[in-house]
Image 1 (tube, one colour):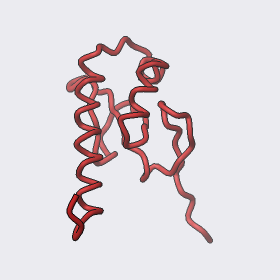
Image 2: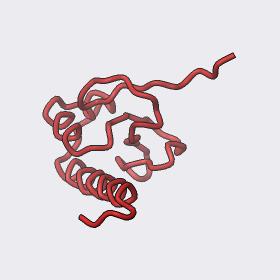
Image 3: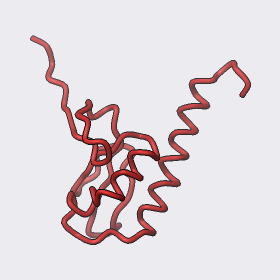
Length: 101
């Protein structure tokens, strides 16, 4: 029997994708809102495509505010943007193993 693939909705573009394709943004009591790279930490999670464009959309549409039922300061979006951009760069660099550019 085929294994069921967990699907989540991006808070930016609204597309349904497998959990592996998305980044998890987490709200915890201790650490506040952060990017959960492992997807295993305890806390309330929201999912987003691993690109800065979806984060911009989520900010405009207040996707995190809806998911976490709380105000999300701009600093949180700024730090998430930095983390997602670094993630995008690492994926690009990994994909361009032998190419320069």
